[in-house]
Length: 91
Length: 199
Image (cartoon, rainbow over all chains, first blue to last red; front, top):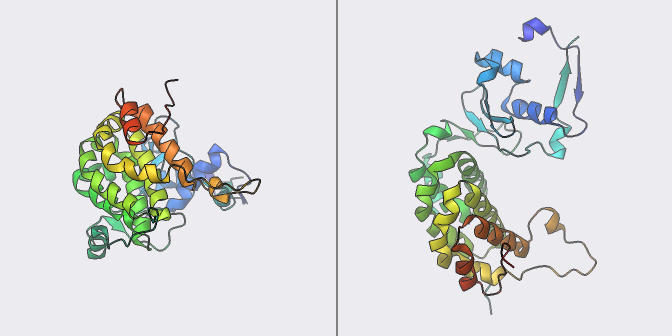
């Protein structure tokens, strides 16, 4: 959990598109920091997050206000959005 | 002689249902990307009811209806799987209406949706074959619409908004996913079409 890993020690922005940036983008669009943050706030195990079987990318997230965001199989994080993705570092 | 002149589009019934709040979508103002916040899981949505209504909105060009209709259709198709195929007959009239507006923006959006529709599940491509007569005549008008820019740059290509190219891509997808009868049926409606599978 976020408590376990302590508070973030630093934050950088996405530089270029990678699967990791794509993953973070999907969570951050929905209002979470990452998978761990989602699991903690929604009180569901990380393994229960709906993912596309082919690519393993996130398929559906429940937002903090209870609405649902659906994601495509393909890449969703545009080059413009890459630079908005926040990559947190812990210790 | 005016074949490609945009026609006045009537306000769609999508607009009426949207204004009335019939769709399970939350209008949310903090959204970062272009996403729809659904109030219910898509798995629980009645596709036979909602899919034709969303398709009806494809002929819209004004915000917010155009955005919600296009994004809604796209979400439903991406996540519909085998719930889409039984609804195909109800989608033909909205598709035809949208193409018939002859508004380039609407045609581009509809072609992109058709490409998504035909690959959404294996049965859909075959189910569309009997309806080629309804939707392909407009393809025929625009098939040759490719900008001849010499050595200039057509920026529509970058954005995948070149109607002629979108049409040939869509027809190829129709042929690939439409089964054995697809090619002859396309050829019947669009005589200049050349197969992408047979030589």
